[in-house]
Structure formats: C-alpha cells, structure tokens
Image (tube, rainbow, N blue to C red; front, side):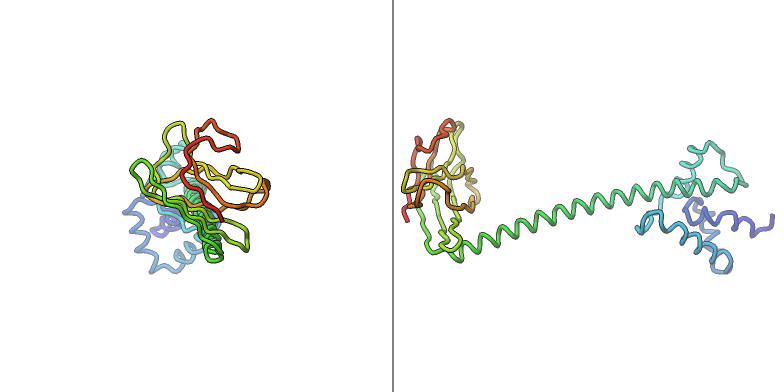
Length: 243
C-alpha cells in the first residue's frame, strides 16, 4: 500500500464525518494538493446530497458516528476495513441527518400553525375595526360592582347588523354565577353570550342579531346564577340599554 491508498480508502469516511480529528485534519491538508481526491470527494458529496432531502447536514461529534456504526455492525475498527463498511456507516449518518430533518419539519409545521393563528387574529381584528368604523350608534352604560368601576359599550353596525360588545373593568363572577348578555327584543328577552370579564383588560365579542324574538330594541347585562338556562333573567341587572 502506498501512502495515497489511505486517502483513497477514507474518502467516504471524510465526507460522512467519520474520521477522528487528527485524521480529518490530515485529509483536509491533503485535498488542496490532490485534484483526484478533491474531485472524488465532490462526487461523493453530490451522490449523498439526497439523503437529508436538501437540508444541510449537521456535523456530528468526531468519532461518534463510527462508534455507532461499529456497535451496529459488530465489527472492530481496523486499519483495513471491508469496502461495505463505509457505505453502512454513511447509512447511519443518513439516519441521523434524516432525524434532524424531521425535527426541522416539525418546527416548520409549528411555525405554520402559529402563522395561521396570527392571521386569524388579524382577520378578527380587521373585522372588529370594520364594525366600529361603520357603527351607526354607540351605546354605553357605567357599572359599579364590588368596588370596581367598569362599563358596557356597544357599537351597533347598521350595515352588517352586527354589534361589537365591550365589557371592561368588572371583577370576575363569583362561584355559582355568570355574566349574561341579553338582547331586548319586541317579543321578549333573548339570551346572548355568557361573558367572563377580566378586570385587567376589556372583554370584546362580535355578535349577530338573534334569529328569534322579533325586532331588537336594546340590550342588557346581568349577573345570573349558573342554574338559570331560560330566557328570563333571574339575577342582578347590571346594565339596560335601549336603541
């Protein structure tokens, strides 16, 4: 074996990052002065480029991949290895790189989900702003409760027939109670949405007009017992607004 045979034998090892640091430095020092090895290394890198599906391979700790391959293959490291060992070792590297690619793919999916949620929030905000800009009437009531001063504000959009309802400054409902928004209609009260106010920030909802109860004449907010599921308010009335 002449000195150059070692470099020929370890071309795949070099591309697969299987050489120990001293061997890797020796191979790197050899490449600039050997067009043959330089061309062969480039060809091997091209052949293995499909493994991570276009993702740049992550270089593993020197010697780690070879130790994994040796454990899997059950073959001790020797000066001269069978020709199939570098290929098998490269397969181990491919598995490691593919795992890294899968991790990147998972992160990409999470980013896509976050982007979708952000777009949904932006769309909701744009919808809210359109209701407020087109509001023909703004109704509001001041509410005092348990030492808190808050209120109810309604932006009534005459074009889309939707309301933007804002509740602010109210404490959280006590155990066994809930905040209930009502539509006051020509045929009686119609239950709207249950609200869970946060004293630190406004609670905002967009509501369409109810499909029953007749013409909408106004709105109300009450503190109802959780057991009340009827269209008749039974709790404390907090606000009563008429159009």
